[in-house]
Each structure stands twice: as structure tokens, then as C-alpha cells.
Length: 225
Ligand code: CA
Image 1 (spheres, rainbow, N blue to C red):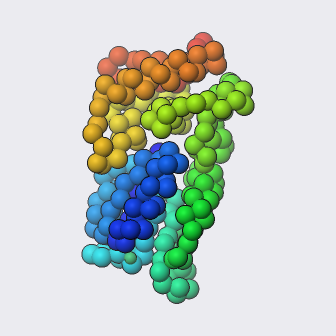
Image 2 (image 1 turned 30 degrees about the vertical axis):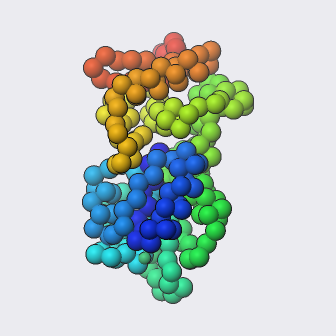
């Protein structure tokens, strides 16, 4: 899952990016409101961490535009201003949670997990098909309750496929969800991640199908009819 950090304090943004990357997220960072607005329009993020005091375009305006486009991703607001009016304005505009600076990275991570667990329109917080489970909040996969060791990219591939269980996902959609702006995109690498994932979920009654020219689908080995 991709997270966008919109924060003009470079040191803070770098600390957030490091912590969230360690937790297995693909994290992009923009330092002003215009860039945030553009990134949100052009890419598919799973969560936005939004500083309210942003140059070029205020954080509240970024949020207003985002919700006007009916984007439903969870938004966690950051602010140095301990001004209750700002908090109320942000929540009224559709922010999901709020942190006042300074905050601990542990608290931020806990809020992120809570937001992802709560989800938006997701029917079940933990996705389970046959013996395979994926918890989007903790970014862990398991087979019959036993942790499944996956690399960050393998986990991201699994996440995209399991969220669209039984449906075709194109390689471009995988690329979009897995790579941040500053990472070199490799379509061949996607094939490698899919190959490794396929081996690791062998025996679960599920398979990653390759639909030539269209993409991949995670599905039951014998589709239920
Ligand atoms: Ca700021």
C-alpha cells in the first residue's frame, strides 16, 4: 500500500518516511500543497498524512479538494497549531484523525494502523480466503495462523491481489501500488515477485493465475461454481 506524506518540515517527513517504510509501506513525500494535490489526483494512495500548514496550498484546501473528488482514502492530519478550530475544520472536511506536533513515531504508527484497520467501506478488516489471511493494518500475511514470511514487495503484490480477489489486476496496476515516485519501476521484477508469492502460497488452495496480456488474478485453484 502506498502512503503519501505531505509535510514541509523535511526532517519530520524523513523520519515519518523511514518509520513507515520500515513497516512495509511504499511511502511518497511531497513538501507543498500543490504537489500534494497533484500527487493525489494522479496516483492511488491508501492513506494520506497531511500537515495543515503547507506552503503554496493550505492543507485544509488540499483536503477540501480531495473530498470534493469523492476520494475516500483515510486522512491523518498533522498540525503544529494547537488551535481547536483547525482540528474541527479538518474533521469537518473529512479528515479521519488528528495529531498535534510534537508526537511520537510510535503514536503515529498506532494511528495509521487504526485508520487502516477501520478502513473505508471494507467489509472485513482482515482478508481471509481459505487458509490465507492478510491483515492490512499490521501488513502481515499468514497461512492457517502461521506467519508467512514475505518481502515488502511480495507483500504489496499480495495485498493488491487479495483486495481484488478473483479479479484481474494488470501489471500496470501492480506497479502503481508498489513503487514510490523515486523508485525505478521494473516490470520484470513484478514477474519475480509474483513467482515467489505463487510458491509461498502453494498448498493453500489458492493460486495466482497469469492471464496473458491482461495481468494476474488471485483465485481458488478450482473456482467455485
Ligand atoms: Ca508545516
